[in-house]
Image (cartoon, rainbow, N blue to C red; front, side, top):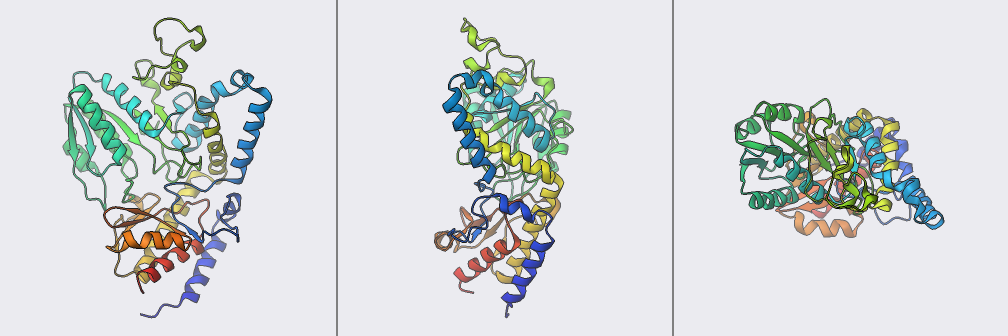
Length: 409
């Protein structure tokens, strides 16, 4: 089959011209920089591009550090994890104020929330999770199960799909203390029905902890209206916080008074500067905090929250669906030998897709060398994660065309 690339380029340009979010691309470093060696960045679901305003905000924070020194803690920094947490909750998570905080890594917060949740169901013996959840989730829960003498109830899933409602219903029982699942599967991009699964768990008397790492900033989330108990997620993917930027934790208001997290640090105490004996948890979401928060690491997140607020989460989701659908269409046209290992139904697809081919392990470094940046997921998956605010349709076409060339088409 002969492919008219000029026609494809014109179609991509038409899509970009009609894209109501296309102007946001100019707000990110490197997106339209002719001097950049990156011609197609398709890894926004691993590490988002930096916003221009974020670098300005970080510079201002350093200036504040320089000028105000230790006074900065009293003037702003002490409350910043909660201030940004409230803003993130309102714009991205569908959460009222006082339930979200920023700090620690996803791994640490996952441990804190899981241990705290399990302590609220002491008579129950099982944790439900799936075989294809992100490795950190599985490893943390395996360790907790060993610590507490609990059983893991595994949901076996197809890596090209994810955990559906019926599979969750079959696994959850009167023995279940906690269900831990990813809202968007890290490999396939499968978008779980968080509201229905949460309701199913509650019907059995269990609590639910959702991992939002691959959904926060790319799909609509309504934690409060879904009656979610706990959630955790990172800020360096679609929230563009930068490498190693701190994660976020959500604890529903109804659980805050009884929630006890296991890493009792001075910043989570009711009066941290009393320096007194014994740990008395702070009121509200501050009790999730342990040690001194990474202030510079959370500054950049505010810029993307502002952009998402301006654009609207629904518009971000619409662009994400259009981009992943476009990548699927290009794959069918230019890569007929490649298997699409992600949901074709947009309603069940998050913000990224995975393509399977036995040559992709060898192809990935060659793509990186030519400035086309996807990521590889074993055993043979090439994961494409366009970021709705910074990825163009023309950029997506460049990426798929390069993959086709590396496969010898």
